[in-house]
Length: 438
Ligand code: GLY
Ligand code: MN
Ligand code: MN
Image 1 (cartoon, helix red, strand yellow):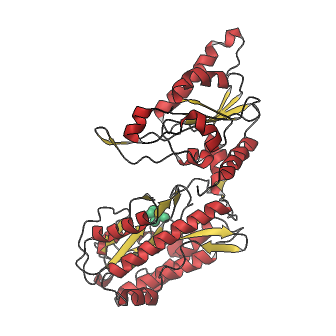
Image 2 (cartoon, protein in one colour):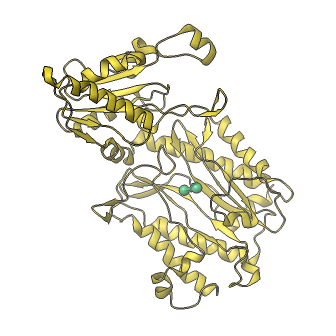
Image 3 (cartoon, rainbow, N blue to C red):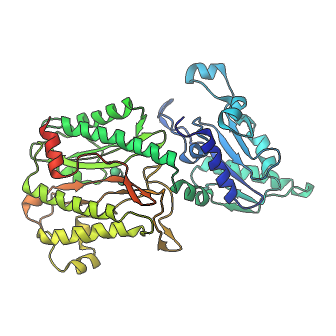
C-alpha cells in the first residue's frame, strides 16, 4: 500500500487530537453512482474516508470517538458474503478490517441503526459534513432522534453539530512526505503522457485519438482514472475553458491545448500544455505562448513559505497585462488596466488552486477574511492562460482563436518549492525539438 497503515493511524490520531472534548466524528463512504439501469460508474471512495482509513469499499462508515475507553476508531462495513463476492469481488468484512486497517473495532453495516445511537449517547458534539449526501444526513438526524427520545430515561443527546470539514480539510491541506511522493509519481506519469501526446500529434488526427494516448499511459502505470475529464482542445476549442467534447479533427496551423492528469492511489496530477499541431509555432502563437510562459515562471518563482495565496495570481495578472499592452492587444496604462480588470477579456480564471486527493483540493484560501500564507507541505497548481475568442473583433484577425494555458503542480517546501511535474517540455524550443524528433 502506498500510504502505510501507520500513517492512516497517525491521521486519525491527529484529527482526534483536534476534536473538542466529548465528541464523535462520523465519516461515511461515497455513494455508488449509477451510469444507467444497474450499471455503476467505477467506484471512487470519498477522499475524506480514504484519507483516514485507506479503505475503499462502499457502504461503510468510520466513527471516531476520542477518549472512548472501549475503543476510539470504529468502522461499519459490509459483511463477508460469498454470493455478493462471487458477483462483485472480495469484501474485507468487519472481522478482518480491525487488523487490516488498525482499528479498535468493526461492525456489520447492517447493525449501524442499532449501534450508532448508543455511540452518540452522552457525547456533546458531533462532527459531520452535513449537506453532501441528503440520505445520510437524514440517517444521522434519525440516530440523534433515537437518543433524544430516551432523554427522560436519563440519556444525554448531543447539543452541537460541527462541520468536520474545517478540521479534516486543514489536515488534508498539509501533505506528508508519503503524499508528496505519490503526487510526484502521479505528476511524472502525467508528464510521460503529455510527452507521448506531443510526439504523436499531427494534422488530421482527432482530439479523442490524442486523449486515448493519455488513457493508455495512465492505465499502464497503475492509475485507474484521470483525475478529471481530460481537455483535448484543438484551435479555438482552447478558448472554451471546460471543453471536453474532444471530438474534432486537428488542423495544420492550429495549437492544441491539453489539460490532463492522472489520479494515482487517490492523488491527482493536473498538467496543461499547449503546442502546435504541426510542430512549429506561428509568430502570433509564439508571442502569446511566451507571454503565458513568462507569467507562469514568474508566478512559480513566488511560491515559498510565507508568500500569501494571492501573490502568484497577482504576478500572472501583472505580467500578462503588461505583455498584452506590448503586443497591442490592450491599450492604456498597465495599472489602470489591472484596476478595471481589462485583462479579464483574455484571462478570466485564477492562476491556480490547491491540489491533493481532489483536483480542486480542500482547504481554505482565506483565514479571517485574509489570503492565507503558503506553508511547506501545501501543493498548488500554477496555470495562467490567455484566450482570444475567435469572435473578438476588437483585436486584429491574426490573433483570434488562439488559446494557451500552461499548468504545473508545485509543492511548497521549507526552502521554497518543488515542481512535481518538472521535466516536461515547456519552452518553445523544447516543444519544437521534441516534436521535430517524431
Ligand atoms: N483541470 C482542471 C483545472 O486545471 O483546474
Ligand atoms: Mn488543469
Ligand atoms: Mn488546475
